[in-house]
Image (tube, rainbow, N blue to C red; front, top):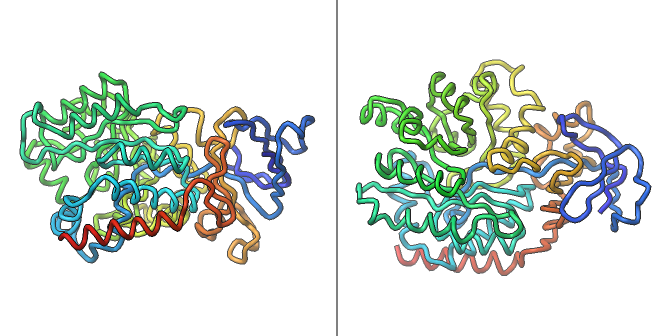
Length: 430
């Protein structure tokens, strides 16, 4: 495809009007002010008038099958929400329910410009099948918990995590990667954390964790170990591999120094954190310290939507409120967190930028809508004025997955119907 007469957000996250961008196979092979000499080599011409081409969004923290629980538990604290609503529902999950729940989340993700998700759950094989069908990217992980303190040899989750890495890591030409995962410090113990960390090192894969989502979690860890959660993870080897730590609402400045030193990515989830009244992640301070901060939605059970542009706006505003400074959270920083930072957190060095020879993971935003006009600064408009429904094309590895209301890889009517059947079946058994 050759995108012509289109605005772009370039590799420095600056807006450039009236550009031409060429895609061949799964790569961006041309960016210029004028058309390339070999126009015919690019196939279809896309008229980009009143449109903006930007890198696809990276959802740095999600639980895709939980689309089945959208709106199921409301107006509750995190721990009540988990124990009274979510865990009982999850105890009734089955293979096909997870497949259709994941596929429903993929449809919503692609509609809103999310091309890749760092996804933490179980029934990994069914999730992989859904990602494969949808054509999306993922760093998926089978989350390991051990609240009962079982022996390592008895941990089914750890066994399934290792099997998933062996079976699926790197398939679909690298679109699907498999990480190791510790659910959280408060749902596991030292021997389990060490075992997961050792497995990650053995397979040389990334790790995903929840870290200090709530004050309750942070305080209990200090009472138990005499250390912060960050210090516990560092001590037990969790940060020896590249790690994405979700939430980090209650980390201290000294914790941030550890995260920076160990190369940990923070996946901030402002909508979920606000909705569950968990607090505000101090992103401005993390930026100041050089921590890689990416952006996540968390599950739609605690967010209710995968509208990533909505998430971007709240992320930017939350940082300003946390710092009590309207000058922080520049457009360049915010867009970097939504794209390149997430790609780096997934170990995808050739992704997340609109740059020649990078993967063609691209979205087109309609800038001709009333809410996007007039334009004084396009980057600001994308962050503060755009809506997720202004995304009119989503491309992953050079393949169009969504365009102008049409899903190219997903039967959306079947997906919605099957997800509803699964939801009703589970609820009837509770």
